[in-house]
Image (cartoon, rainbow over all chains, first blue to last red; front, side, top):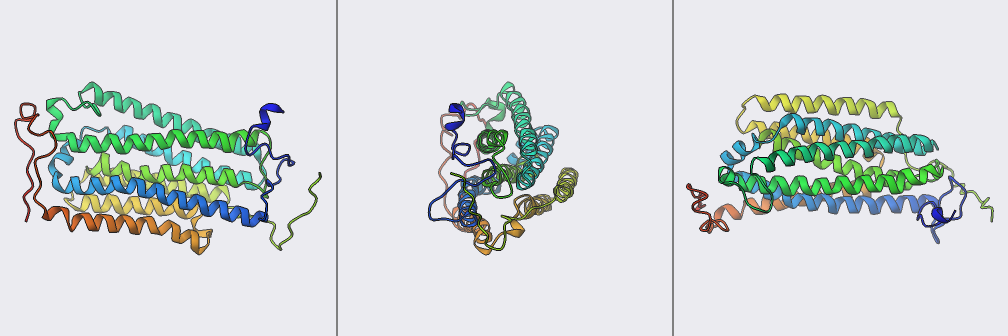
Length: 222
Length: 128
């Protein structure tokens, strides 16, 4: 019990499936407020990436030919495979919410588990790509080998955008484990209480959403 | 200690339960659109390549937001929260593109130091 007691969702001294007690709020109000707060947070996340998309747009406008050439250095197959992996993980995250709403805690563990595993596969493929780039002298932060100097604008944006996205993948995996899988192992969720599963899934869908734009911009059209 | 009071507000159900089969259909659509966008990029359509790629990406993003994220079942406040960042992004891009191209640009940072590394100096931008 002592290991369970430290968990913010598991420990509320309420029976499994019951919502935690939030003073001055009934359950539907607390649910709506939590979701509204999550969407506000997602809006700020989109704005964080918006700055980079804006930088990409203006740099591409100035250096169109360089961007086209630099883009050809990226592996479309690895990028496309990663797109499929993320789309599938987003699907299982969405299914996990339905499972939680039906009170199927094992289903939450299974589907969020698949999403976390897909996040890991995504990161492995991404690191294969990064090490391939580094092998050819396209390093982030340390400047570029003279063959790639003209690509520095594209590569700088590539590393910033995919790096920040990869950070979000890591955080999303942690969120799905801590707020989804771990409480579900304690049969925490039911049709009355599934807020953490839904908010965790929303975060993971955002990660997918950003990649839906990153993949064609970086890998396909340059 | 038993919390037996039940919230009977007329609707016990929170949120909207979307069947798994709906999510599966959306996944198939998203994968098909990914293949379409990869194939479309192999054809040289000039500036229409990026227009097409962004259009397909926006269709995919709409499917994810509307179905995976339960967007089409949410209330007006949440839908407003979804739309505002995209409006702000459009304003930012519009602001940058109506300002930056009309300025004289100095040489890029570190360009002088890297002259040997870059025999062809990056273009200086002197649009008026």
